[in-house]
Amino acid sequence: GVMIRTAVYEDLPGHRHARALILNAFFGVPVASWFLRRTGNTIAHPDDAERLLRAGELVLVFPEGAKGTGKLYRERYRLRRFGRGGFVQTALRTRSPIIPVSVVGSEELHPMLLNLDLAARALGLPYFPITATFPWLGLLGLIPLPSSWIIEFHEPIAPAADGHGPEAAEDMAAVMQISDRVRDTIQQGVYANLQRRGSVFADLSAAD
Image 1 (cartoon, rainbow, N blue to C red):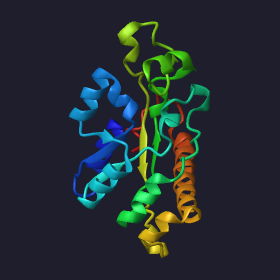
Image 2: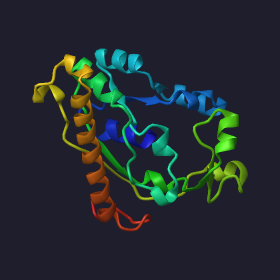
Image 3: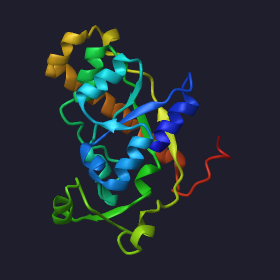
Image 4: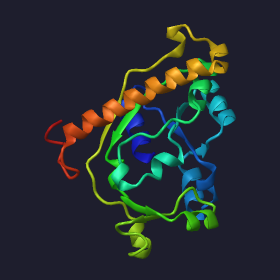
């Protein structure tokens, strides 16, 4: 989420900081917990998201959840299902627009070849990755590999503009319709930007 938050600050009007909602499991990892809290992240809970939005904060959510970061390398850039649309319900209740963000570059940082389910359960983690460098290189294996990034902010999706008020948060058909629209927008953006980028090591500065 660091790259997205940096892009939010640099590219969107107002130079505002986004507060990322992170799975509770990651706050249980000592070093990760310290880093996440120090960088302004908070636990992914609807109450926290609603409180932040009502306070005028920008909130960054990852609708795929652990399924998104825990994908194997061969499944990269294929979005998983967005759960039950909790982020849409929060947006509806607070009358907040949803800005879909397509990201290319993140899924080559730690290419996961295998997930050790038993180790993950023993450690209370959503997954335990075996990558090209971890655990073979020890802590050095946690250093991300180089990749070229493209982060695209799409047009906001404002449920209120489509006639959906806060009461629509209880209408699961409407919630899932909006969720699918957000997912489709992101997925199409990812595919388009993968074609635009080409090689994972492409120098995009010249193209810009």
